[in-house]
Image 1 (cartoon, rainbow, N blue to C red):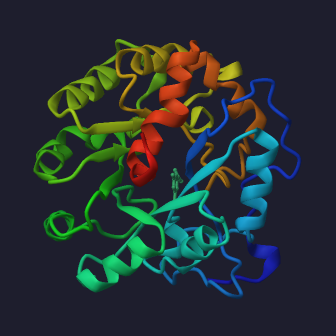
Image 2: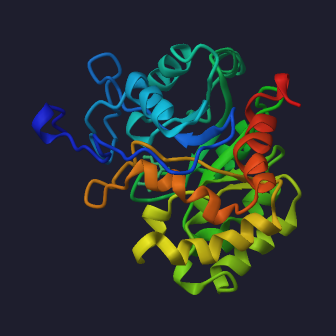
Image 3: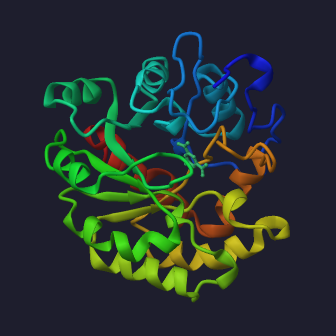
Length: 295
Ligand SMILES: O=C(O)c1cc(C(=O)O)oc(=O)c1
């Protein structure tokens, strides 16, 4: 696949608005990525998209513009199981970033320990067929059984796959964080079948968390109002389980590039009180990613 500049996509805006909402001091963007720089960190041969560079300098400049202070950098699928671009960004963050790795399940315990020292605090299992070629659940369970102390598993799957994945999730021996709430159909509203199934999952284990993220992916309504109506009750009912993130640089959103300032202005709409914002933006992500300094 060609990686020359003219064929590489840009899925993020170069001039995001400054948000109206000012996050509290210490707020965490708990879901973002870096792409490259490709000449130092080439993309995977299995990458389903080849983005332009979106490196640590751009990530941290955006974070400052949005009024956020910490980042959880999630290994993007375009980099496969080579976590060096993500580790590079964490190393450049002066302690303000942690990460989630994508590993080959045959990874050694020593390599997992090295990832911990590099700032990783979990591994990601991606089940989206449009993003990865295979997701061997038995091998995922094996490596999930020997993660460094304090790690968790992040999962990305679609709502239609939730029921099939319930036994796998139940078998995971570490806390779980669900990316983008497992992509519910927010047009069903807060009591639709997708949200009811997702709530049943959350009720099945006290250590399942979720990212109340990606209105740009999940909503087609003006102002993302259907996302707010479906997600705010979930944040209010599970205040100690929810995290928030920008999902910058918004992989695969080049046809519908979101404004990062508008994403930040969604926070008080889904977490309408300072107490909920404190949990969403600080307490919950700090407990999971900076447990050595929190509380
Ligand atoms: O929906 C997506 O296309 C997407 C892709 C990735 C990735 O490529 O890692 O991560 C996400 O959080 C969402």
